[in-house]
Structure formats: C-alpha cells, structure tokens
Length: 257
Ligand code: BTN
Image (cartoon, rainbow, N blue to C red; front, side, top):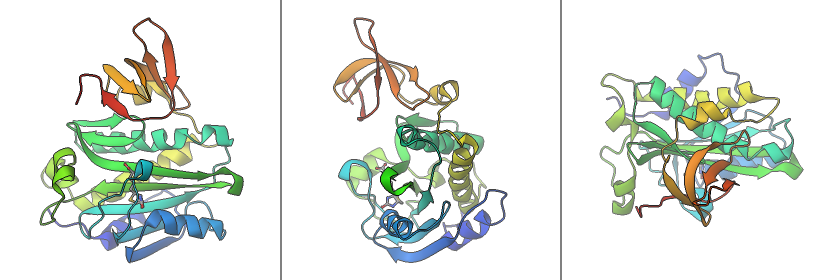
C-alpha cells in the first residue's frame, strides 16, 4: 500500500462537496489541537482545519499522549462553532466516533466498532481516537482526530503495539491509504454539518456499532449496555434492573480485560 502523505490527503479533501474552512498544514507541530484552539481564540471561523505531518506533544483524552510520528497517522483538529446549546456539545464526540466507524465499515473494514464514547476499534484494537475540547463561553469547540494509518517501519512502543492497530493492516487490498484517511476526516465533518442545528446522536444508528454490548463498568457504574441516548450518554442497566445514563468515564469490560 502506498504510504500516507498528508499533502495527498489534503489534495483529496479539496475535491469533495464537504465545505471546509482554511487549512493550516504544519510538517511538525506540538499539537494540532493546541494550534486550532489558539486560532479559534484569535477568531478563526468554523471549519478551520489544522493538520500536521507529525506532533511532538500530541494529546489524547484524560491527559494521555497521542503517538504521532511522521507517516504513521493523520493528525487533524477542526474549529467548530456549534449554534446548538452548549448542553448538547458533549454529543459532538459521539457523533464523530460514529462517523469514523461508519466510514471504516463503508470502506470494507467489517470489524470496525465504536468504543463509547468515541474510540474507533478494529477487532478490539484502537485505530482512531477523538478529542473534543469545548470552550462554550468563547463559542467554540475543537474536535481533534488521530487516525493510525500505517505502523510499517515505525517503532511503536510495546504497550501501544498491544492495544492499537492501523488502517493499512485492515483495509481491503488495493485501497488507497490517503483516500481512506481523507474520507474518514470528511465523514466526521459531514456528520457534524448534517446534525446541525442540533447536536444529537441517532441512538439506533450508534447502538449497532457499539463494541461493548455486554457487562461493563463505566465511572464506577456496573451494568449491561442497553444503548445510547440522543445526548450521547450510555444506558447501563444495573443488576437490580435500574437503568442509568452515564455521561463520562471509560468503558472497562467487566470480565476484567
Ligand atoms: C484519544 O485519547 O483517544 C484521543 C486522541 C486524539 C489525538 C488527536 S491527534 C490530532 C489532535 N491533536 C492532538 O494533540 N490530539 C488530537
């Protein structure tokens, strides 16, 4: 498979019907998320996109780092100025996660699933992560996506190698990696634009993509996954039959892995 070249991904982005703002490309940057936040604070409009060839301080959720060497992935952040009430903004991450997984399935990756709220997994291994930083008082959010494209020739830290995968390993032969990466990014932006003026998840659509459908522990609540709410929360049914909508936390398989 031809290697990932961000310039080719960007060229592909411009040939589609999805409306994008100005694209800021950096061969190397600390974090596209931080740069997009800086630009948004300075007034950058909705759709402003920051893309990097590599990140030296890529950020993941809950204070983690995001492995971001050159050629291994797509690292992009987009400025959003949702007209929806801030109470609906938490749905952004789930909307984006659903869009990534649906797009991967469309591209023939049958094993793609959503690990609530917004990780894309393939056969249980993470291929993409989404980070949403919301600044409702300033009227914007920054949605970042890290997509593992190809780990070939890349020294992947052993702890990551155990739990992560890349597109190259999972796409049908003959797929263009750059095309695939561009389509995933566009799918996220298009899903956001389609959802407006509200930010709501379509529960039936998202539920069938869930990776965890059995016993789960989220934020201290143990229960059976029973679906999603339009706000993107996860319904858990506890042992006593009581249903709880959980809005934060990590999914842990109750069987212990
Ligand atoms: C996660 O923890 O799963 C979220 C990872 C998000 C990583 C992306 S890469 C582009 C953008 N810039 C960052 O520093 N982080 C996000």
